[in-house]
Image (spheres, rainbow, N blue to C red):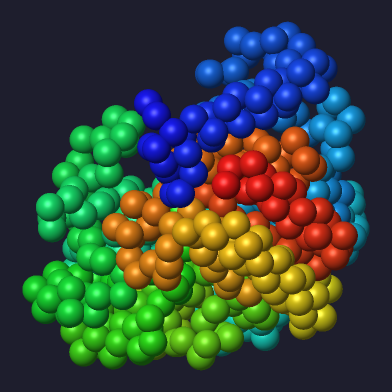
Length: 455
């Protein structure tokens, strides 16, 4: 392979030389981490408690000793500016003080008992204040919330399918694990143990393509459109002007519900993208950071959908609903949810996040332009992403093509060696209410140093 071969404008030989050096630097600096991993090997499948922990780009996982504010400390003593923030789970910072206090108080009162509390009622009022008037239910993850919302949609419409967008992200909901290949819906490649034909229960079209949305809805078998307001978890894709208005109009015209999953786009501002941009979903879903990092998700339906579901529920046979899990809606979740909504997820917090994210995105753009890299930067509120391809992107197919795993892995490891952690499987960065200017500036400087070598 010659120097003329390039990935996103970067010579492959130069990229691989940097990647090898940065991987060696990471490994040499972490003897305690390596020894601890070796000592603990064998207890877990693949040596880690969740399989994707092996998929971070560094040679072996970083073992975290402590997380506080917007910083991690690993077992080798390195203090890392954290812009991943648990891939949104800790978007408001690690262990926000009001949430930590709520955990301590509730721990003395019991962790779970399958009954509601006064705090649960207070949290419900706060949910309406933050996100709008919905009839709420609580789950443990956004995957669960999306799954339960789809059951409601199918129940009230009597239809079997969900419409999602190619390249979408809605956790691990089976029905959304589809993609477009040669213009047809197929199960995503790589799914483990997949036996069901997902095209029987789901259909995929491209984001921003209202004609394709209408063609799918016109078949009459779509119970709901499930979408993020902005495509995330790959290369970020923004909605084009009029797209969300079109989704709302078409869903009503053809009798499908509109479910908006704000699990990542809660970064957009107070109340999420839907509130900031005056969207009107039939069902609203959010998870990850909504309770300050305690595993919690919320999903709420409008009064009209709630009434339709109540009518359905009153006449269905008794038995298992297929919704709800024993540990969901436990009192610890509500203690954290109330504290986070009332004291952490505030206008002041979002103002700080917006200002910091604009500083970060502007700095990254300056670096990209200075090095004439054929890349671009996207920002949605506190969420920033650099994409190693020209932009803007318009759909999931373009996002998949823009993704450059080899290049991105090298950049991620190089950033970590310079003290900044970003999300592992794409180039996402979050600015929290406790992220400081100097942390942002260190990341920009490290990015500049890396691009100076690459270009």
